[in-house]
Image 1 (cartoon, rainbow, N blue to C red):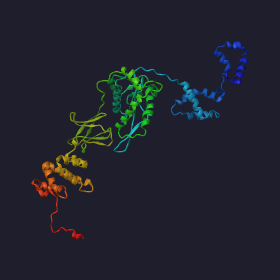
Image 2: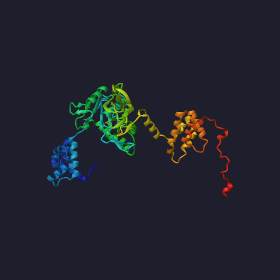
Image 3: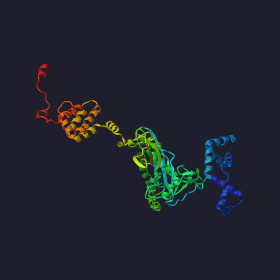
Length: 492
């Protein structure tokens, strides 16, 4: 009738009899009072003296675990010295975890839309390969999350320095399309100069950034990652949804790496959240975006300034990246001022007269050189080193059909085509001295011959043979009859 074993019912009946009360009296008891009669207060675990001993000392063990350098293995070794018959290591750790969960209840945070924007650096870095050197370069990853909707922004950076962090935060706010009331970070050195539970001190640059965007800076308590749980969760999910999907992919620039992360970020924000009907983007657009403050007219610009001297190779060194940038060669040996940010490098002389501007390049020991900064001889040498077969034929075609024919014949005159480049350069430069028309006429005459080279065309122009009209019979290649020609009979 009850579905309970006979022995169990017998045990209940025995406990009823031990109370000395009738069944009628027992039925008048409350459920709690009756349960106290039926169910034994003592369990098997409570009867185990090992568990009783560990329970009595749980506060001591949990306190010791918070001390620097103290591990569970060390506590277990000390425990076994006092209790030789005590638990083995795995059970000891399991019980400590149970004690900790009982002692550390978790508070459920409730957030207001548009209020808190949490930022943090992910523990795992991403990387790309520098194509020119093959060097693997690691990139720290910034993760930003709105606490209410969990809508996130993720970007790998060149470094954790403020010159790269600030532009990334600018892009994060542009991605949101507005500004939250509070930006919450941990005690990262880029933002916080002095950590304090109640009044942390922020860097001057961080304060200027917050004023520009009309937002408030806050920092978590020291060593309290749960003060920013939303971004901590986003970091964890980014490993699964972004890093894991990129694990077999290779990237050859920071820009390429960023765009791949941003593509996966869109999928991450569009993905429905577990046990919820909406995605992060849906919650953000419908509930949180309308509460954000407006962005300022321009992003916060962070610029640095340093001094340098123009080297004999007409370059200056930006010491932070150890990269060299060119200036006009006339300024060799002069002192200049370099003003730079994440994107651009500007070089000034005298009373802030700008003499060069470059796209910033983070390659160490690299060179960024503009052709217009080079002396004429250097420019010509560089041009010569960079010639290709197509370059010669294209320039020759712009002069004329006969010149193009001559250049193509010259390019095919040797086994290694590179050996003909100097001759081609010489032929094309004859146009600068004699003009396109004369060079075209000279090439027309030279193309009649069985062989062609630079000296042939130069001699034609030098001796003004290009001005002599070609006779009709000179336009056809033939071998005239003469006594040195041997006929077929000679070879019988």
